[in-house]
Image (cartoon, rainbow, N blue to C red; front, side, top):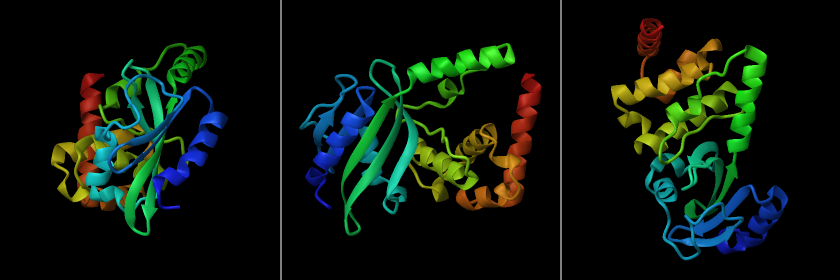
Length: 219
């Protein structure tokens, strides 16, 4: 299927199976075609694409991806969402999107309660510290490679540029996020991260040293 309208049945199936907590959006490269289980009044059928979907079109980094998953967005009400987008293509030409927006506020609150019960205190909410208007990603996958890819997808959306154009500060922000998620606890991860952010391994170690020094000064 290459015409986004042909995905209406699949979109309806997903909306019924996932329930009212999951908004399902179907759009072509110009406007929203179908909206199921709307979470708020942000999207309407016939509206032009929002900034997030437009960025998928404008950013070359997404043109070769079949989908992007578990990135973070928020509703106009402030409701925290976990989102995923499937890229609809006709051969290699992008023709539309099938996006899922799942409410996770209740799960975040449950996580805080569990952390309080198991650790005796509530950890700082890292989602607040990294969330952006276009959403950011906190992967649930145990695969380090997938985790690195997820953080890189987040960076492309957040900085609206490609890795070869990331500034030093943007790279430092990416390394800080990967460090927070435990990427560098795995042997060989520095080499893979260096390739992704277009830097040398010594540069990655220097970023990590800088991040650790900053953390020690704050503590």
